[in-house]
Image (cartoon, rainbow, N blue to C red; front, side):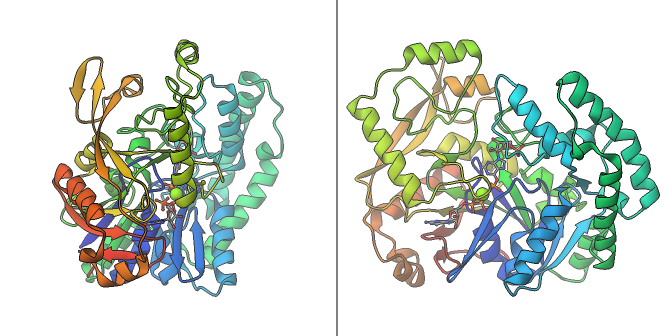
Length: 467
Ligand code: GDP
Ligand code: IMO
Ligand code: MG
């Protein structure tokens, strides 16, 4: 059996925590897409682990695999491994030979292109997009290539002059050490040696299938959220891979039947957050007529600017509310430290995610963060150009034009969440249960767990698919 964990919103839903929770019953934990742009948090007692590349199963000492659908920065890989070893863990990490390698020139190009664009995406700057571009352009260098000096040299000799030309001739910039062939060869063949010495590389699909055939439980960890999926997200404000369930097949080499016969668990934060640019219809923005962070086209920006009003009382209240939720929930980027934009839970987003990945269950977290508010709102549908719709429209411009229809719930009080977590579901405040049951019935899926704090023990588990 496999269990796949998927972010149902815009990232930072609490995927790392759920992988750690359900990881107890797993034998292997696999990442299937993304790279060191992720920021997954695992909290165990007083210890907090922030993982950008390694699967969150490392904290429990599970065998971890970085799948072929990932892009791997070897420097981050070894830094994270060394840091965990220094903290007393003994990570067992394998890397797919088919995974693509992030080089310093990818990071440079990520930065240059963001600067150059009118509508910057607000990337993490880790070179993710340019590495996937090279993969699709058939000029990428894969983990397996690092193990063979001849192959590595040949591939670098082809690609480095091209990238130098792009930097100099397209962007009129000076290439630096990130495009020095000799340095790149020396550093990356060194990474190849270390991968070989530590016996870290695997033929991912074969390896995972043989573990499954031996009766082992495989947990798959999506790195980003559905709304920043390159196909199902709000293009172009997306990452360059597929966090949705299809990515779990292509990103590991396990067949769709293998993934589909297992469980697919959507992770839901009890409200909405977003880092980077793009629409966030339920955003608690504080400025009427404006959508901060969504740059849109130049015309859109001009009309937004004209429509923007000084903060009214309602706007000020929204801003206070956003600040309250941001601070209570610690909504600052794990990788970049950027404050996250905050809004109400958005059901059209969750319906879209539930369909795109076929969730068999959902985990809804951050219920403690919303405690103490008089009322809590949920976006239940959108109005798009005069028509009511209940899911996310296909273009980002349309999504940006959606206004939201809300349903208001009575708030719930701050309680002793540790006690609630140990007593179970019925110990949750009544209004919180009403909120959760509404979400569950609207998505027509089962509530598998409820998060009431960041810690491993601060979750009420109703279903554990790995046991
Ligand atoms: P990921 O990227 O999906 O793994 O999520 P992040 O780790 O970026 O962000 C989730 C944040 O919320 C982390 O700081 C978690 O420790 C924290 N967290 C997860 N679940 C809960 C919860 O139920 N309540 C609270 N208060 N924090 C939570
Ligand atoms: P976790 O794993 C939230 C966003 C970036 C940017 C867009 C593209 O913590 O959920 P990229 O560097 O991937 O090319 O940036 O995607 N983004 C994330 N937002 N959480 C993440 O990861 C993200 N990873 C990328 O902010 O808008
Ligand atoms: Mg995160």
